[in-house]
Structures are given as structure tokens and as C-alpha cells.
Amino acid sequence: MRVLNDNNEQRTEVPEVNFSEVFFWGLLSAIGFSSLLLAPLPVIVAHLRLTDPWSKVATLLGALVGLLYFELPIWTVAFEFVFALIAADLISREKSLWWVLGLPVALGVAVFCGSLTVMSAQKGVPVLAFWNQLVADWAIQLKAALPSQTTVQWDVISTLLAEQGVFLLMGILFLSLWLSIGLLAHFNAFPAGHRLGGQELRKQIAPKWLSLGFVAFFLLGILNWPFGPLFLEVFRVFSTVMFIFGTCAVSRVLSRRHVLGPIRSAVYLVSVMLGFYVVVGLGFVSPWTRSFLSEETKVL
Image 1 (spheres, helix red, strand yellow):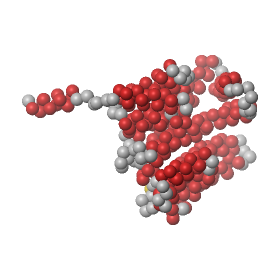
Image 2 (cartoon, helix red, strand yellow; image 1 turned 90 degrees about the vertical axis):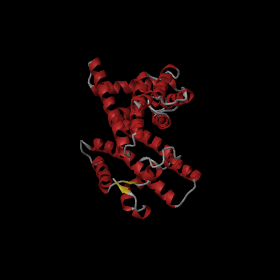
Image 3 (cartoon, one colour; image 1 turned 30 degrees about the horizontal axis):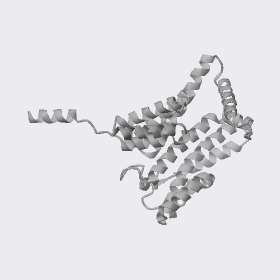
Image 4 (cartoon, one colour; image 1 turned 135 degrees about the vertical axis):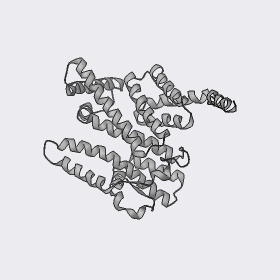
């Protein structure tokens, strides 16, 4: 009887929740949904601070606030909601860095391409023609929303999106997740011993085959042959991956030299805003710069 009573007590136990905290993270999630680049950040923090199902409730509340109050497009909110929710769930289950980065990005690109295919089929036009028309419509809407004196090369932007849309999306999604994870690791938001904590991330280093493949895609991209532009777009996606490894290299150097937190923040900010390609270069050469690495460095 005692065992039966103990089981009943465990079944009726309900996790405590602060509804004001749920609303707070829901509001921050709505603000994050208004910017694709930072959409995962508040959702991830909500999953770290709240228990299930309240973390999911806060994310759903953020999506509703984004739709009803901020009047965001429903397809944008739906995409960011699923993308951020998958990433946050993987992080809460302490999956590895590249599993957290790879799965949401792969699913996001698959959903994007699938949606284009379905919508183009409904319109009865080829996928590429539908995508070009969609980009042209976006450019017109964005031009109308900006002040008339704004100087923007709309033709260049339209051509860039039409030719590189999927690859740009992959790069943005990788960068979005990495910025969120990097910020949380920098401010020690992850629990002690978490697989995405700062100490663990500093162990990441690009394998030599990846750096060599990075160069190979660049060389194949600049050659004058039919597949050159395709290899060049893949090279740009690889640049984002190398940027991630380069950021880990910068963090290792700063950590080994015991640089203070505020100075680290300034270095990271300058690296992201002004030194993107320098950080990409650091990621590329990281397999051969063992003098900056500790013995615990993990080669992927």
C-alpha cells in the first residue's frame, strides 16, 4: 500500500511555474521572431529556464504575439517557430554542437524548398520562375516600405536573392544558431558541464580534410566551367562553417591569455561586425595552429 501511495503522489506532482516568467519569455520570443538572425536566442533560453511543457507554451505565446501584435507574416513566424523550437529542444537534450547546427538547418532548407515546390505547382509555373517572381515582389514591397530617399541597388539585391537564395538561407540559419549559442556560452547561460558550454566549444577545431575541401570548392568555383557558380555558392556556405571554427579559435586564444570578460565581448563584437573573413581564415588554418590549442582540443 505504501508503494502504491508513493506512486500516486509522484503522478499527481505538478511542476511549479511562474506565469509571469512564461509571459516574459513569450514576449522576448515574439521580439526574436521579428528578426530571423536572433530568433533562436530567447527560445533557447526559455527551454533552459523553464520546464516542459511551459517552455513550449512560452514559445507558442511568442508566435501568437508576433502574429497578432507585431503583425508578422504567418509563414515567417511558422518557419522561425519550428526552426527555433527544434534547435532549443536539441540543446535542452544536450546534443553535440554539429547535431544542433546541422539538423535544424537541414530541415529548414527542406521546408523552404518544399514550400516553393508546392506553391509553384499550385500556380502552374516552374519553380525557378516562381522564385524569381517572388523575389521581384519582395523587392517591390521592401522598396515601398522604405523612405523614398533611401539609396539601394534593388536590381543587384534581386539578382543576388534569385541566384543564391537557398545558399544564403543556409548561411543565415547557420549564423543565426551560432550567434545564439555563442552568446549564451559567452555569458555562461548554459548549466555547468553542458556540451555547449564555453569550455566545450573551445575544444572544437576543423579537421584537415574540411579545410582542404574548403580550398577545393573555392578553386572549382573560380574555374570557367558550367558548375563553377554552384561550387562557389557551396564555398560561401562553407565560409560560415569556417567562421564558427574561427570563433572557437579566437575564444581559445583569449582564454589562454586570461583576457577579461568585457574585452572579450569587444573582441567578439569587432570580429563579427568587421572581421568576418579574418575569422574565417582563422578557422581554415586552425588544424595547423596546434600551438594555440590545449591537449584537450577535440578534432571533429
